[in-house]
Image 1 (cartoon, rainbow, N blue to C red):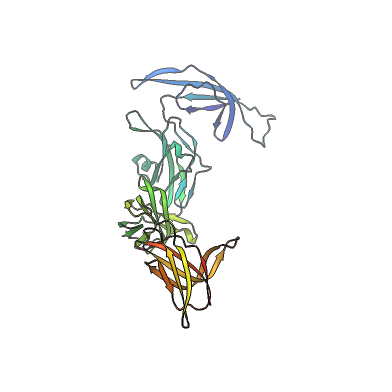
Image 2 (image 1 turned 30 degrees about the horizontal axis):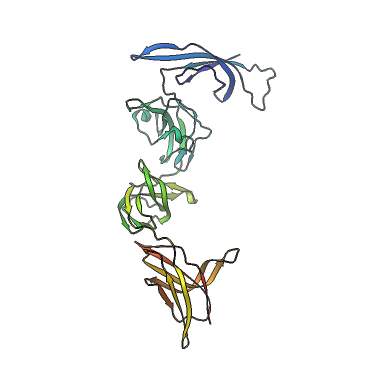
Length: 396
């Protein structure tokens, strides 16, 4: 019969357990409980409990019990003096992706409110609090694929400890886990430096004053809130700004109060995988202009002749609060399966920045065209509505 080392559990009154994991093996069995032992520690009454598990080893599919004694005794110590158990990082699933680590725990603490994950270069750095990266994860976030972000390039050790807030609202921490080596091969880009943020109608203009190595590009978001130093709950995301850009414009932001975030990125070894920087300082802005809803509607489109010239006159209605409209006569149209028009291309004639409800295309050559228009609000750039219903125009 095997005698397995004792296993620490959180304080509590345990009567029986269905199974225990020791190392990488599972043992089945029930516990014979021992009466709790009470003592005084630091002026407070504490309770501890011990019991013996009589059970058996759970065999893997490729094992059989011929000649194998699977009976086991496990001495379990429930220790009230250690309120926060030492967590165990699950090395089977914890892994590095670019400059961040996906985090998984194998053993948890029932007493914990959450867990602190850090990387450090050495045990000495760990004790001094010289972390190369750190984050806190609440219990509710453990099942949401938590990450430790922005780990510097190089080899580090990953540690974890449980924490809880006591009755005096002071944070208490348990012991650190064993360190797990992690290697990061990607260099984290420098975080952008935002010089100023301006609002014009539904556009947000971000002026950068970044120095250092130029990134491959920037991402910009408008968010409903922020979590620490990062925006969260995005409502608008714009990617693909050039790394040489000093001015970024986020168009079409709805009325409301928003948190604007910018981070830089570099592509990993020529791939399409982004390595993200930390967020620049999050800026709070207020947009007072409501987005334009609806789209222009054509009332009439008439072809007229003046000598040898042909004109197309269009009258239409526009959405409320728009600044103007742009119109096209196109040579090509896209259709859905039911034959309805879905889009136009190959513009033959265009009329931009129209501020009235009529537009005239002059000197139009004979042929078949497709008319479409869209309204806009002009902040730092035009923010467009959807296209009007497409209308076929025949010029003879």
